[in-house]
Amino acid sequence: MTDRDKQRLDELEVKTAYLLARQDQQEAKMSQIMARLVYLEARQYRLMKELGIQPEKLDTPQTAQDDAQAINLTSIPEQRLN
Image (cartoon, rainbow, N blue to C red):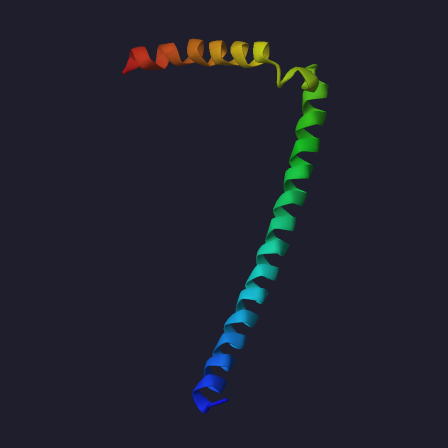
């Protein structure tokens, strides 16, 4: 193996170590984000229960349609002001 090959191999090892360290950082950050998301979802569920909203019905087509209609009704006065 020539000196150039050894130098290139050393460069690749340094880059590999950097990429592995960066990947570890990103995985740690992703874990933090996931933990925060789980906390927020649990809190949202609890608040909805306290408000009398049934969280199980949020993903139904009827709920989506009702929400869309409510959004449209609230945006009409804003559009008239413009």
